[in-house]
Image 1 (cartoon, rainbow, N blue to C red):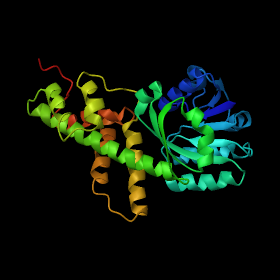
Image 2: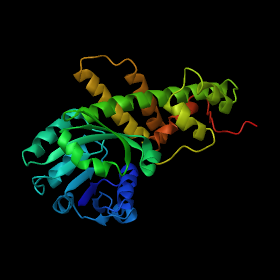
Image 3: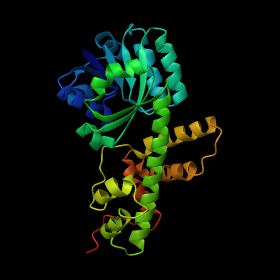
Image 4: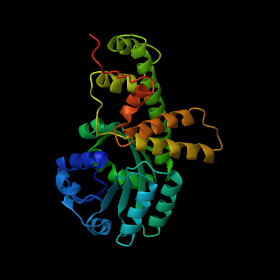
Length: 293
């Protein structure tokens, strides 16, 4: 089987390498023509060229606008029996429209939101939240197993991206809240390593305290993951979803404001963990990784 991969950035490039290392043939395309050779996949000049070569096409793209443009570009080259797997974080309404459009060509479309970050992508331990026909998901499970440890079928088309948006909302809240807490602890004179030890055996424990901030206090921001701009995009998609569900988001707007602040202060294209520096900037230039010995 030949696999296609469109979007070879921070996450897509890592996932494509995992698939290559498993012995699969991969034809890849990215807006940056240098990405495919850097990753090691066979380069394709256009998405249509990928569609002509591959039985399964994986997408890892920034947002629904780009996903829609790529689907437009490969649409006429698709053929019955192909499966398109969208690993992007996208608007569920757009996902469902693409699903219907490709179904007219007898092409299956699986929305497969991923979680775990760059480190999990490299280790092959990502979690996937998938929407679409169960049969289509079953066809691609052996491929997903090259880079994901947990694959959950969430329901019909769009369900995977719904789950991903809600998960990313929680991710953003825990990151922004923990960043603020760490700046407060630093300004209060606490030993941050000890403080994290306390939190991680107490009721404030979360993914950020367990996996992010023990590294950040040592000066390692875990570069290569989701940027503040992309986190803000995901949070805005979550707020759109909340409106569609006719519910009021209490925590979404202030969380979004934290990542807009990061962008305004120049951290937008850097990893979202830099939100702690943005909060530190407006707290008087605090840096939590400073050596206090």
